[in-house]
Length: 109
Image (cartoon, rainbow, N blue to C red; front, side, top):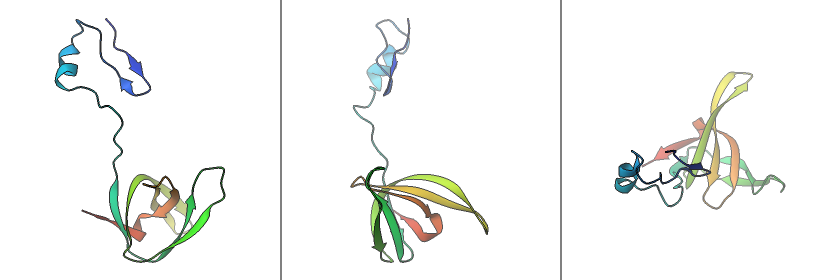
Protein backbone atom coordinates (compact mmCIF):
# COMPACT_ATOMS: atom_id res chain seq x y z
CA UNK A 1 0.00 0.00 0.00
CA UNK A 2 1.50 3.30 -1.05
CA UNK A 3 0.50 6.90 -0.68
CA UNK A 4 0.27 8.90 -3.87
CA UNK A 5 1.86 12.32 -4.20
CA UNK A 6 1.24 14.71 -7.06
CA UNK A 7 1.91 18.42 -7.63
CA UNK A 8 -0.80 19.29 -5.07
CA UNK A 9 0.71 17.01 -2.44
CA UNK A 10 -0.83 13.92 -0.87
CA UNK A 11 -3.79 12.45 -2.74
CA UNK A 12 -6.45 9.98 -1.65
CA UNK A 13 -4.78 6.74 -0.48
CA UNK A 14 -5.77 3.38 -1.86
CA UNK A 15 -8.61 1.46 -0.17
CA UNK A 16 -7.48 -0.32 2.98
CA UNK A 17 -4.64 2.11 3.66
CA UNK A 18 -4.44 3.22 7.33
CA UNK A 19 -4.80 6.89 6.32
CA UNK A 20 -8.05 6.20 4.44
CA UNK A 21 -10.09 7.05 7.57
CA UNK A 22 -8.35 10.44 7.88
CA UNK A 23 -9.17 11.31 4.27
CA UNK A 24 -12.82 10.48 4.85
CA UNK A 25 -12.87 12.73 7.92
CA UNK A 26 -10.61 15.49 6.61
CA UNK A 27 -10.71 15.52 2.80
CA UNK A 28 -7.86 17.31 1.00
CA UNK A 29 -8.67 20.87 -0.09
CA UNK A 30 -10.13 21.35 -3.56
CA UNK A 31 -7.52 23.99 -4.36
CA UNK A 32 -4.75 25.87 -2.64
CA UNK A 33 -6.13 28.72 -0.59
CA UNK A 34 -3.73 31.64 -0.65
CA UNK A 35 -3.24 33.47 2.62
CA UNK A 36 -3.70 37.18 2.09
CA UNK A 37 -2.95 39.80 4.74
CA UNK A 38 -4.22 43.36 4.89
CA UNK A 39 -1.36 45.78 5.28
CA UNK A 40 -1.26 49.55 5.69
CA UNK A 41 1.63 51.65 4.42
CA UNK A 42 3.14 53.77 7.21
CA UNK A 43 4.87 56.17 4.83
CA UNK A 44 4.52 57.40 1.27
CA UNK A 45 6.50 55.13 -1.07
CA UNK A 46 7.29 54.63 -4.70
CA UNK A 47 7.05 50.94 -5.56
CA UNK A 48 8.24 49.15 -8.66
CA UNK A 49 5.42 46.83 -9.75
CA UNK A 50 6.20 43.72 -11.72
CA UNK A 51 3.41 42.47 -13.99
CA UNK A 52 5.47 39.54 -15.24
CA UNK A 53 9.20 38.95 -15.29
CA UNK A 54 9.24 39.76 -19.03
CA UNK A 55 7.49 43.14 -18.80
CA UNK A 56 9.30 46.30 -17.68
CA UNK A 57 8.62 47.47 -14.14
CA UNK A 58 5.92 50.08 -13.56
CA UNK A 59 6.61 52.74 -10.96
CA UNK A 60 3.64 53.48 -8.66
CA UNK A 61 3.32 56.00 -5.84
CA UNK A 62 1.61 54.76 -2.68
CA UNK A 63 0.24 57.24 -0.16
CA UNK A 64 0.62 56.90 3.60
CA UNK A 65 -2.40 55.05 5.03
CA UNK A 66 -3.14 53.04 1.86
CA UNK A 67 -4.48 49.58 2.71
CA UNK A 68 -4.08 46.59 0.40
CA UNK A 69 -4.37 42.81 0.60
CA UNK A 70 -1.17 40.95 -0.18
CA UNK A 71 0.65 37.68 0.14
CA UNK A 72 4.10 38.05 1.68
CA UNK A 73 7.41 36.31 1.14
CA UNK A 74 9.78 37.64 3.83
CA UNK A 75 13.55 37.76 3.49
CA UNK A 76 16.57 39.76 4.70
CA UNK A 77 18.52 42.26 2.60
CA UNK A 78 22.14 43.15 3.34
CA UNK A 79 22.68 46.94 3.23
CA UNK A 80 25.53 49.27 4.20
CA UNK A 81 23.77 49.87 7.55
CA UNK A 82 23.35 46.13 8.18
CA UNK A 83 20.60 43.57 7.58
CA UNK A 84 17.07 44.84 6.81
CA UNK A 85 13.92 42.73 6.99
CA UNK A 86 11.94 43.01 3.77
CA UNK A 87 9.20 41.18 1.90
CA UNK A 88 8.12 40.52 -1.63
CA UNK A 89 4.48 41.65 -1.86
CA UNK A 90 2.14 39.71 -4.12
CA UNK A 91 -1.01 41.78 -4.69
CA UNK A 92 -4.45 40.34 -5.44
CA UNK A 93 -4.39 41.70 -9.01
CA UNK A 94 -1.35 39.54 -9.82
CA UNK A 95 1.31 42.25 -9.62
CA UNK A 96 4.39 41.97 -7.41
CA UNK A 97 6.65 44.43 -5.63
CA UNK A 98 9.98 43.06 -4.48
CA UNK A 99 12.05 43.82 -1.37
CA UNK A 100 9.70 46.24 0.41
CA UNK A 101 11.09 46.95 3.91
CA UNK A 102 8.89 45.80 6.79
CA UNK A 103 9.44 49.20 8.39
CA UNK A 104 7.35 50.84 5.65
CA UNK A 105 4.11 48.92 6.38
CA UNK A 106 2.18 47.32 9.22
CA UNK A 107 -0.41 44.57 9.46
CA UNK A 108 -4.08 45.45 9.89
CA UNK A 109 -6.56 43.05 11.51
